Image (cartoon, rainbow, N blue to C red):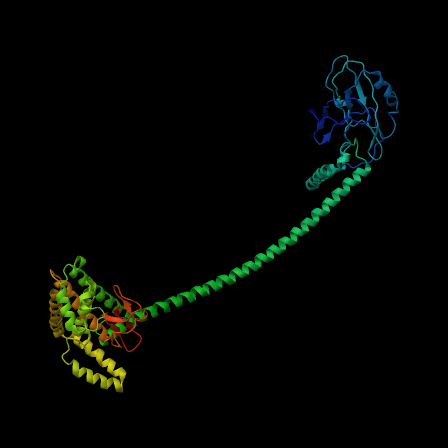
Length: 496
């Protein structure tokens, strides 16, 4: 026998006494239930065998006021044998003091399951714990469900659980489920079964769709695998072709360089020529700046002016002789150094070390007028032969030494305390290599003079120190270099 304390029942609308705590008595036996013997029992009503018929006995203390007793006299003498009166559960009461009174409340329900009457019986004896004699409890009649198989009993248990969950809240407090409540429960079960059947059908359809989608996905996957294998095979073939063409390109590049070396004396192009010209300019400026010293202390003014006069440039110079400043003379010295280099290396028909420059120019002009490509090829081949000739090195040393000596003499006359022999020789070597690179190109590059008195053009000219950009050219410090095409190195000028 197991005892469990239930929640207190709410106060009934027809009773003013406070609710008392309940203790529900649950009697169980293997595969059967104990039923408390009720005092009053209505005729057996045909109900569902799935729902148990519990009984309830509510015992609570009554107030001592006589008014409550008089109010319940009618209920006490009511007929207990009337239909639909049932004692729903036997619950033992907690013992109270000897002076307390107990009331026995009988709940009667109609066919609709509603409570419509209660009665009280006042007991003046001392409270005793409620006891149930198992011998007085009739055995539960055998159920037809005992012959069910294991699967049938499992289904019956599920239906019982669903009946418990689906019972309306308004019937939970009903003493005995009526036929109507049983029908409603059955209807709920049927609806629940229909819902489960519908859900099962939907899940089956979804499963079929998923399986079909899986089959389609597997087919697409197989197609993609085949396509990937084909692409991998094509990639291998393309990689092999690329490697072969890469090797062919290396061979062609090597052959091209060999061919270029056969027809050109150097590997220079327009970009390298521009770099060489820029380096030559910077070397000349640095030489003059270092030769003049701080504040031009090493400058010999009279010697610089005499050299300026001998060049014939002083007569057309816009600044009088007595007003010449040191920077004027230093700019003139840069121009004089570059003029000497042009005369020694750049202003030659073919090369400064070639003994037949005059005859070459006449023949080249005759060939160029009749077949320019053959004339250019002949010029380039002559440059290659000159640079590969063993005697060229000896002739180069002679020409470079002569130019370096001339520059050293010029600078020593104008500046004192000068000791720049190595730098001057390096400048002459750079000028010789640059002249050979300019002549060996397909379109030969040569110096182009800039006329004095030409208005300054910012796009085709570069200014020097303290030059007036709105004036005219008074001194060409560095000449322009051009070819027959679009190549051009702008001149460096001083304007007044």
